[in-house]
Structures are given as structure tokens and as C-alpha cells.
Image (cartoon, rainbow, N blue to C red; front, top):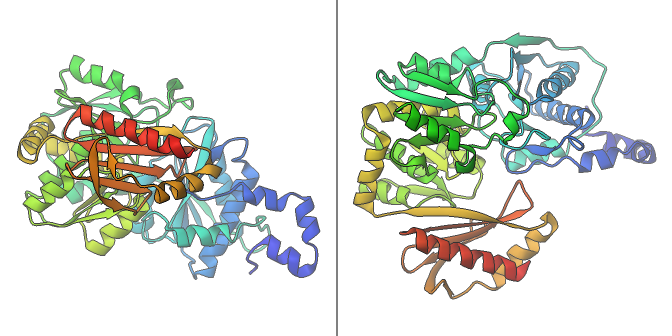
Length: 481
């Protein structure tokens, strides 16, 4: 089995033929970043997608896998067609392929890999990006996000798709029921009497998350639960500026909770009656605290996520593991530490006993079950009264991708002694530079893994202080652009 067309062409002395067809240029456009390969549709073409399919087929074969592969896809106009192309390539390489009967959430596909003992999965999704984007990610046999060693191995095998050899089968299957059963068995939820407004943002959570909530006894009021490949003109990103309608609906319906998923439903956002949009850091803290009432175990959080998790863990004699940004690192640490919960401030979470992959469908059920036992606002109030006020926020600074490394290098050579009038006590270099200040606040500067931007994060005890830190972070980045 060849590793790539490039290798074959070079060995046969015909590399110029491959170059004439633009082979290297086509492969150069494919790069697996923080969560797979994403690109605009003028770059994310069927030809390149098929090359990814061949690379995955070769990777799986080289690793000795012969079990079926599942290929999932989100609600974008182009996603099903790309998924069918991937299925065609995998089948041409002898793999049996499972396709869902319609677009489905990424976590449903990830659970199917583990539940059915599959070789892995490919998921066609651009997650929260606008409709002019699409993407593809590989999910290994453990259901966790692929680590760089795996994605590097796949990139090294990019090749023109094979058309000869015995073909595998392609079958449409139901993946949702098994995931729903796993969620209910893991939690044994009781949401009777709870009213939830669910916002699918026209994405793949529709008919999945809302149905799971109803199966647990919740009354569900639906928003944007129709497929719309333009996502109603708003990217399916569950951020505060995209969820004003959900906040209004929770108030108008006198609901107990609002829940939104992003486009592929691996992340969620929560709205409460008192706070409106509930900061993801506070949601993480509330759920971890609630889980600790009946269980034990460490938490895993990214370097950009709140220290409130650390304070809650310390109160229960538990440990916190800090990772770089990206759920693949959270997942790896969750497995290594047998963590009770892992998460990131961008709304991705998972819990022990499930696949170590962020799951906005399962977390919606966990959120509703917790809110049915005690309103989330009351739990958050109690946590802040106990551990002190926490305010966190982030901003982005435009930075071309080819300048990111230089900016990071320059920052490393010029760490300030103080930020916004407070001395720098410790510098954490897990991902960019996190400056821990003597007053307990912190500032983080790191390059985005998905956009041409530098990210600036801050946490402190007041809104005013966070704004000061973010301004200082902008200035710090601007100095080196």
C-alpha cells in the first residue's frame, strides 16, 4: 500500500506529472488545526475532501483497523454531499461505512464509534463558522479528539483516492437512539416540572437535544429548530450577541432555563432567568460543584478557563489539571487523571463515564437535571458568596497567520514586570503567555488556532478590573504586531 501519490511519483521518476496536476498545491491547502480542517468552500472542495478520505483509509489500514467507519455530517448545504464522497472513498478502500439518516451532532457520531466498536469516524462540519465554510475532523476509535500525532500521520498520507480493489458497503443507520440511551443511563435524570427553551440555531441539535430533554420529563419550547443552511443569517455560534432572542424567550415564557447548541451541537450555552446568558465559566463551576455532591474526582480545565474551578476543587480536596486550549488536550488529561469533569470557557464540556469529547447534547441534559434540583442562579450565587466574585472575558486582536509565531516570540522576550498596575508573579507558558498577578487576577495572550487573530483573556474580581486587563493585553499585542 502506498503512502502517497507524491511518494509513488518520486519513486517512479514522474513527480513532474503530479506537479503538473497541481497535486502538491491541492495538498498544501489541507491542514488539520485545533479541531480538524476547516476552510471556505472555494478551498474546501470535493477533490480535496476525497484526498482526506484516502489519507484516513491509508492511516486506518496501516494501523491494522478493519472495522467499519462512520461518516457524520452537519446541517450545511454541502455537508451531506461531502460525507457521501468520503464514504465512497472509504468503501473503495474496502471499509464498510455507516452514514446517519440525516445530519447529526458530532458527539452522537463520536459515541457511535465507541458504542459500535468502529475503527473511527469522519465528521463533516465547520461547527460555529458561517455557511460559506465547511470542515472535516477525524475521530479515532476511542471517540476522543485526534491528537497531533494522528492528524500529522493523516496529513502525511494525503493522496489521490484509490478506485480499484474490493469495495465495502455503505449503509444508512440510526445513531441517535444509542446516544440518548447512554445519556439517560449515565444520569438517570428527572426534569419533571422544568420548562426549557431550546435554541438549535438551525443546526444539528434540532430533534436531538430537545427530544432528549423531553424524554427526561422537561417541557420544551423550541426556537430555530428548523434546518436552515444559511442559519438564519447568523453564524451558529452560541455567543451572547447571537442569543438575545433566547434570553427574551426565557423571560417571555417564564421558563426555568434556556439552552442553545452550536452548529454541530458539541458545545452549549445556557440562559438563566436572573443572569440571562450564563458565562460558560460560571456554568462549568456550577455543574462541577453539583457533580461533587454525589461523586469525587479532579477537574480538567484549559489555561483560558476560570480559577473558580480551582477554588471549588480545593474546597473538596480535589485537584485541577490545567491544559493548553483545545478539547483534545482536555480529553487526554481527563483520561489520564480519571477526571470527574473537563471543560473550556468556550462552552465545551464532558464528564466521566462518557466519551472524552465535548458533548453539547449530554451537557444540555446535565444542565436541565441540575436546574430541576436547584435553580442554577441560586447555585452560582452561593458559589460566588463562598469563593469570591469572578469576572472573566476575552477579546481578539487581528493578526495574520504568518505573523503569529513572531508575535509570540516577541512577547516571550518582553514579558512585563507588571500589568495594569499589578506585579506579575508567575508566567505560565502552556499555551501562549498567562501572566498571574499578585492580586489573584490574570491575563492570557495566545494565538488563535482557527482564525487570523491573537486572543486576549482576563479574569479578576470586578468588571472594571477585567476591562483594564484586556486593554493592557491589547496594547501588549499591538506593540509586537
